[in-house]
Image: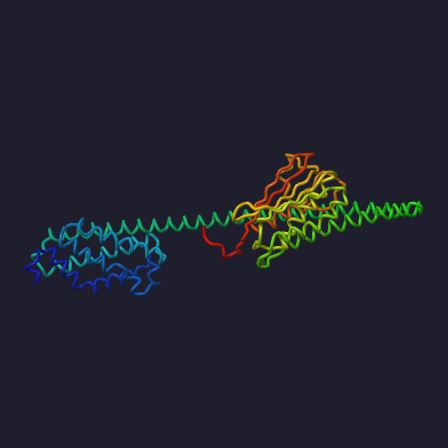
Length: 410
């Protein structure tokens, strides 16, 4: 269809479509030569052209219909895509505005070129064409800027979130380092204190032998007791270091709880009864095989039984194992010992916490070891205690412990 049979603005739109490739290249040359558009020189032809040909075609539709509203959704979509891509390419808002202004100038120049050989394309038609082009390009510019701002804010939010998470992780690591430092200092203070006491008493025993040979037997007994206490301290420190440093995969095995129960009873009975205490044992015969780490379970039970015997002067220590339901079983160790003061309950599982009794040997690591092993074996530990009346520890374990990384999602 010739220009004469089309409405003037529709004829101009048809000409723009015919010249679309030439106009796009003309616009790109002006962008490349614009000194303030530094990012454009780093882009390929396809990257720079982006959605401009589509937007040009949509502006042609605006001219044909002489109505921006009909084409606005399409223009908005492509303008948003253009703005998002320019943000990714490193454009500033000023550069985006500048390249779209060059696009406007190129289209305005096309109006002049079209009108010169066509007297029927009057000044009024030029003004209408310029009006619709200005409206459309302004809309493209505003929409692209909004998209750039949105992308910028999203990026800022993302970086802010990362920074906040990094700060939280840093604070956590600082706290962990501080706690580790305090823990190591506590180890040093505790070991130095106990070692000094050991050496003082050992020195006293040697002086007693030197001054009173008749008391040699008593002095040797005192020295042997101190050596035994020092060995207990060192053994606890070594055991705690091994527990914390164990990064091997958790080894699981099937075994019967009754066999473990009998082994524990045999291992601790002599030590408990030698103090004049009674060992009470109770086993639920409905318990069969479990899947767990037998050695770590034994370590937990022995630490609790050893602690119970340490802090009990008269009465009994009780060991029991019972079923909870079809998925869990319970280990229970109780005593009639000194108990735990209400104000000390928060500290009971912390490192180097001991009852205020100078005659109790050890580093105060037994319950800290129990807590760490319970974490590994997914044991839920609870205790109840009354000062002067004894303490009860109960730990609920899964009957079938799943290895890390194989647990089914909840």
